[in-house]
Amino acid sequence: MFSFFRRRPAPAEAPPPPEADGATHGASAGATGGVSRGPASGTADGPAPPPGPDAARPGWFARLRQGLGRTGSGIARVFTGARIDDALYEELESALLQADAGVAGTQALLADLKRRVKDSGADDPAAVKALLVDAIAEMLAPLQRTLVIGEHKPTVLMVCGVNGAGKTTSIGKLTRHFADAGCKVLLAAADTFRAAAREQLATWADRTRVDVIAQQGGDPAAVAFDAVHAGRARGCDVVIADTAGRLPTQAHLMEELRKIRRTIAKAQEGAPHEVLMVVDGNTGQNALAQVKAFDAAVGLSGLVVTKLDGTAKGGVLVAIARWCAEQGRVVPVYFIGVGEKLEDLQTFDAREFAHALLD
Image (cartoon, rainbow, N blue to C red):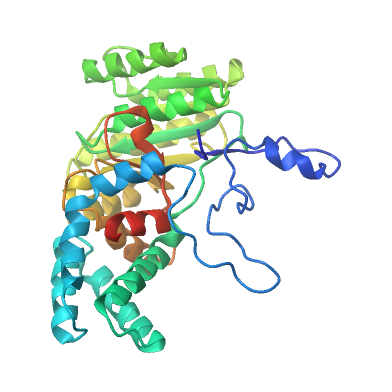
């Protein structure tokens, strides 16, 4: 399995030997500080050229490219002509808006692309298309970060999202990846009102041989509190708290989310260490509205974008990136998913995504 997350090395009194860097699970060569997982830093002779798709995961790239096929084909058709003129840019603007890149994201991309075309002297649509790949990759690059496990023991993840986004399934996949990497994981079934959610989480717990804390009809905040205490007592590396899916317009349920967050903080100082939202990529601009609402309620630290397969909505990541830029902060996209299989949820790579969208 390629880089999926990074485990923070245990602190040492003396500087570790050079080979100790290899002890972090899945850390890429260019990662620094256990957070960023950006492009290579370059050499003394200058910055390294931007890489293409990751050669280490061709199967995943093929699935991602297939999943983004409808989005990408709508944009790629713009570049089938023979001229670079105002008509091309107008068609591109329409295609990006239809792909749910959003008005602000589309305008920013077009302005950047026109600058790149002018600076490079590109004179054919194929070259402009390649410059658009660069522009999208650069816009999405701030969203590309590695989830760090091990700075706290346990590292507590609180997972939220709307109904049907794939939240519990994504938790199951994350649990499997963590367990395969040697992490001791405990699950908290804090969605206490939907029996199927507890059963679904229990099924993943059985598959991955991890424990789950659950109770029927109980207070979800109490379940999360008990799970964090149990995780500390059992020496777990990760505690993942599932929460009930809800719409951001349901004020009483959003307040319940805030209560769960506050209660987790009482169980362990500084927790939850990550507040992740699972976003359904099918929902387009609604996804951005949901991100804004959940961020205002509980302060998101990362996203998992699912169901980026067979839809015309893949451009929503552009809209999210532009919103982050306008806010002056980053809510990274840790993982993206294009299907139901375990391997269909993987780390987000900005340049890989841009290539899959338009190549």
